[in-house]
Image (cartoon, rainbow, N blue to C red; front, top):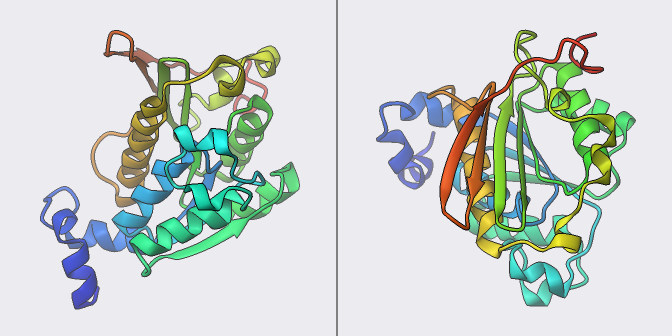
Amino acid sequence: MNDEQQERYSRHINLPAIGPDGQQKLIDSTALIVGLGGLGSPVAMYLAAAGVGHLILADFDAVELSNLQRQVAHRTDAIGELKTNSASQTCLAMNPGVKVETFNEVLDHETLASLVPQCDVVIEGSDNFPTRFAVNEACVKHQIPLVSGAAIRFDGQVSVFAGHDKELPCYRCLYSSNADAAETCAQAGVLSPIVGIIGTIQAAEAIKVLAEFGSPLYGRLLLLDALTMQWNEISLHKNPECPVCSL
């Protein structure tokens, strides 16, 4: 690290669990962020601020007025602009020392097979199960850790899936094939800070995975009920009949 990096990241470096070696791991890492909406916005901003050296931002939507209630990487003057471009500008304004790459197409299996192996972690913040399932499948195949988050109404959840550990569950172990009928935030609504809370936790978990400290949420699902502001944690178990990780 040069002098500017040592000053910028000094509060990380001062943490014994991270230190200069952990910060260097962040600088040398690549993270794929799927979805630059309510969850992906704080993820991208905090990973950029934390010095993750290479961010790949994937989303094909444009910024809309209704997004601005919760998608904090975007501004009013970005309406109509691709979310990846808007988020990229926000990240680079915060930290011009990181590399930000954008991908503005639907993530199909072929595309994920190209993107995921380039990464040290994938953070999933999309709003539909087909994308979540496809991302999980690619992470399992290429043994890349996956940080998953979701939020709707007043509820949120976060977990981390190891990818490289066949004894632990994958995202697909949690949900059946009919999960794609679930409601979206556009249909059901969401309290704006909820996505910020969950996205920030996703960013923290991704940093733990990349810098190799602490205990990431492997095999654990963290649940938030914001109406009562209560957290619960449940243990996750591998599904022996999972169509993805049991093969």
